[in-house]
Image 1: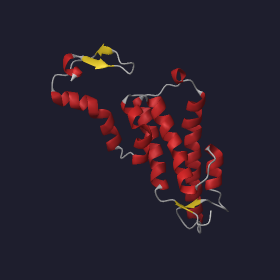
Image 2: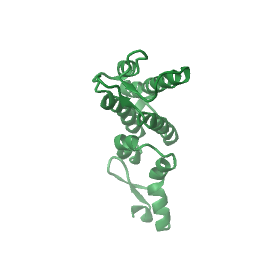
Image 3: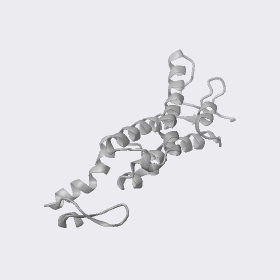
Image 4: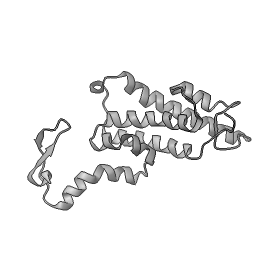
Length: 170
């Protein structure tokens, strides 16, 4: 309701002047726009689980960082492995001795798709998790559009992981 008088609360908890909202519909539109963007892109619930609070606070740095780390956690939950990052993905998706599966790995196309998911997960870690883990927050610029694109990519990976199962006796 602060928007109706032209005020907003910053991440630091301070009041700041903003363009005054004229109607309750405008307040709703401005407040719920971020959540709507996630809905429009059909963002996977696993992504929201790890980053929704950061995203709604417009802390895109932490939002994408936590969402990327959530991918590794999801692979660990499926496989029972305890390693992280590239080692985790290499081991979980080892072509000759995998810890998980989502297809029979019988055809070239199935093998290619399996390797593609592993490489997608590794790419997300190289593009998102690793730079954020090693770059101070003030030096890593992330706007809403880029954050939404990254969260959409992570969501796509989670949708593949929905189809994964642990290899028996692993």
